[in-house]
Length: 343
Image (cartoon, rainbow, N blue to C red; front, side):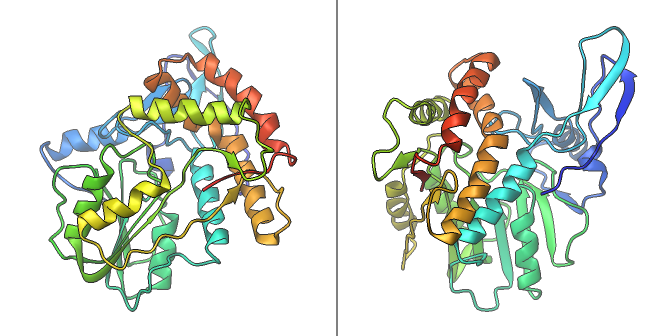
């Protein structure tokens, strides 16, 4: 994950430059619902900015995490014309790092469902599209669709993958029933208001004999050997993030919640696999140690972005208060004497 050197430029101080989809021509489809195509296109590309971070424009406010990438320019508080600096936000890099961590924990596998020549694959909340692209490469005879609220996916794609701007929480999905051989969703916590409803829609649009795989993270930090103090900043962060997400009408489930939802939706042969992701390289196990290295990188660079939207919107914190909490958390994240993990 290399950062790219970016220049200093001069622009009017009252303007913000947002490269359209990172300067790329996306193979992008916008699903039309109640608005005309022009207004939807504008809402997709007119991002919102808050506390120095960029957020999605389509269905603005639905998802409290940022979507910024290399290339966003923020003005300095100087006179009418002044110098600007490119800032390199970490959110999209964090998403790709999380993908790498998941691959490590899953033995290098993109899925755990026993797929055999799937033809139609849906990736809900595709983010940067990295999983969808790799699935398209692994299954060249399949058509892979990735959906998201943000057009942040890359330009160069396999011919059998496309991205659509769509809201998985919409009352109705626009695909036919019994359509997909495999539906995948990952890391959608803090973005779903009704998980049971999401699973019902996934069941409705999965073919008989098909699979829906949900890969989720419980953000609560914990430990098995009491090295994580109940009074630590990490435990406090876990508490306020859960409270903020619930206040934002995006309750964060525990892993025990999912199986009953799957059963009520109609799924059978339900299997749940629990994996522990260490917060830093404290484990002796080689794979877990490697996962911990990347998890530490993702948290150090990205936890502030995860926290800003939730805490300022959900609990009415000031941005400065969030930054103070992050300053307290970072030393604990790096402490290998704390054997903490997330599930």
